[in-house]
Image (cartoon, rainbow over all chains, first blue to last red; front, side):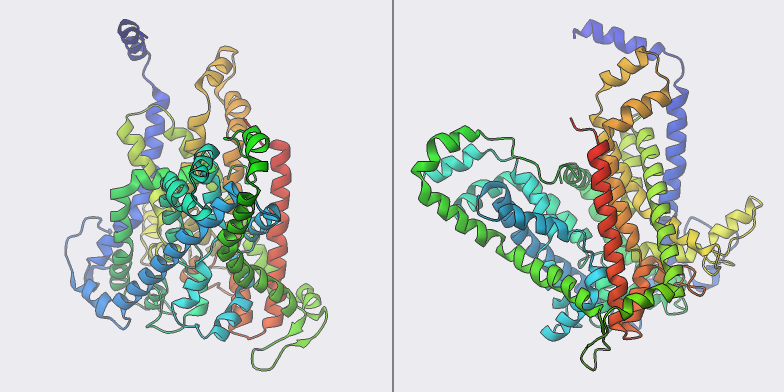
Length: 293
Length: 317
């Protein structure tokens, strides 16, 4: 389109009547957005309050006092919070690394290698996504007990090392790698492993980063997990961060609210910072994989 | 989740079949061996941590087992017991309420927000709204539940404070057999609506503008246009979102632990909480296994049903 035509079109657009629909859309989204932010804001404000002002009426949304002591109380409280943070990070990082090794290999084999029984095995893995950990938790608990890993990080890392969802995700990404490139590598004398490692894998970097994010956050044994850790871990020292915070809340919600919120802030803020830095990329990874996977 | 068993679209099959295959039989064999090696870790993990436990759980469901003494075979006793277990009925009712509410609200609101975000507005706004709505889905449900548990307090919580400001009656969010399910649902929807929205936004952007414009020229109103053009075009995304909300809502657990501990009574308890209680508090592992088999059967049924509906209904490019 010539620039004159663009200009014409633009001015025509501008002359249209006031876009009430758009204004209404923005207003609704703004109100909804306030609803999404308010709980987090309230968490931070409460984390900075002294007990005397916890239940001020009307509630204030701007921190008037900065009781940093709440954070040191949270960290030095009855629970070894730094230890719990470390546990969570260790489990999630090792588990994610495992998935980043096993899932692309299998995904590549299903997408680009040929072997007998391939489809049957693939469908078996596919079906395993219908079996949530909640269904198999009793035998899993017994397996972990027999392996002697109950109440250690390995009870969560071992089952997290392989992940059917990751295999499907990577298969979808490898299907976009042209076969001809791989054929060329083979003709040049590269074996299957070299072809995979040096030719195919570098071509699915986007897929790997998407897999990393999704595995870290959504694998039922890793960072955000609660159910499996709550069954496999049973002491304050081995607890992951989510377990520790719920313990802190206390069986009758007796935990001091400002201290619990300080601990929750410590748990949420790192996620917030990572998200603010990498949001464009995280959102792209997740949607791409949902649309692809 | 696009077609999971997609066929390869990128390569020229004739090339392989016609020229290379006969000359390189040895390579094909090496490929096959490599194939088995490449999938073996995942297959091993699947056998040890999914299929094995699933078969074992089925086995345990025919036994009485308390961990201390070895399991004894009791036939269908555990399954017969399911039918007279009144707690189980209530717990399933709660779970189904959570599932239906999650599917309807997460997808309804998610689609609404996605359509609104898709309206032409300054890029910054689109960007900010998308991020703000999406962020809670990245945060552990346990943390989110802790925040809401404080907001929901009957006497000191700010939600009831604002309800009173606008003249409404305070709600007993955490301790009422009729009202507390709402708080579980609110937390679930609040956390997950942004993810569903994100998927819908991505799908809406794929809908060709010309189609909508053509419908407009043909005189279709906004609603008809949405129902006849937009919904069929994004049916793939709807299927994906409905599937993950259903499976996710069947697993609701920690939010209830934090908010209501399943109470008062069993009025907010979910099926997963009940399984955990029977297995790890009562050490009634045989019966707990039978209950988990019912959960598995339901998830299986829902999945098969959705695949059927999808085949009949989803629009493919």
